[in-house]
Image (cartoon, rainbow, N blue to C red; front, side):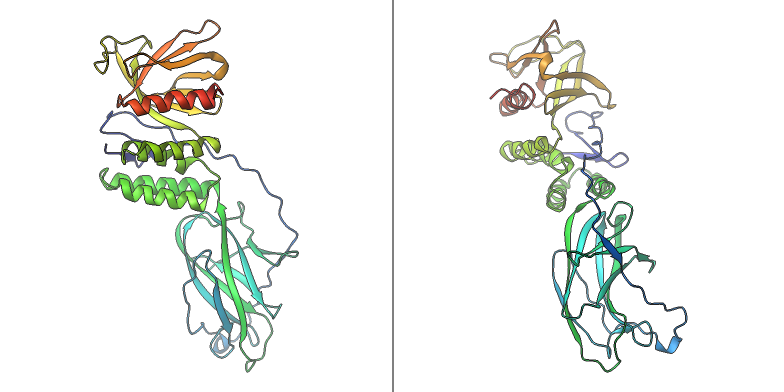
Length: 359
């Protein structure tokens, strides 16, 4: 099946299954705020009164990548110069946006410090943890702004002689996750790129989603979409279920496209020959302790907790699933749009395990 992504709102749409069906955007992931460490502001040399003939750029600005160490030697003869006695090395960091990271700077010289500059050459606020010696951004959410951009990471020393020997150091930016805004923006970028491919970029989208899941494994959005892509694009139910289970574990949903009658009654016909009265095509969202069915306009059609569902099972010889209500709630009938047997079993088993909490 060919998937398309709605670029305007950043969610998947199965054009091969239903022209108007779309998944609602994910809610912001729940995160537990962490206290800021005791920190001191990184010193910044005052260049306002520095003669222009003293200022110079470093001889080389090599690239640096997250999670990869860079070994350097800050040599006053080739380094950039800020003042009479202040020198610096600089690295180019290309970021996708929203990254949270800590900067480790190891050197025998304790006066070395780090700064980060955006593409406009404006310095980002940065703090040094007095306990660990690590540097962190002091932006409102602790990370880089969303959106692709190039930054400069500067290693500098405030007071050294021009003929001093090079100062060896190791610089490493350890990725610790993504901000909520950065994560949402990355999902949107994947959506826009996939939509621009005309629905042919499923494998590219999977690759990018898998990278997003590695960069921020604590949020469910990438796993939710991977579950859908593996199910409907790769036709790999085993891998799809693995992704769905991870999304559920993180507070997200396992999502399936379903068909049903407008009043949720049984269909006419037997086996695969289903005829629903006033057929509807919707999305089934299975979450921990709850199911929700939404339509293509993101409106909620059904929300039911595990206490409101007496039993879930499939009708004999049919891909139709029967959901029996408890406490006077009526039974409802629906089927996966694909009518795939493995998908029927997956839906039933996921609802039993995560909504009804039955083994």
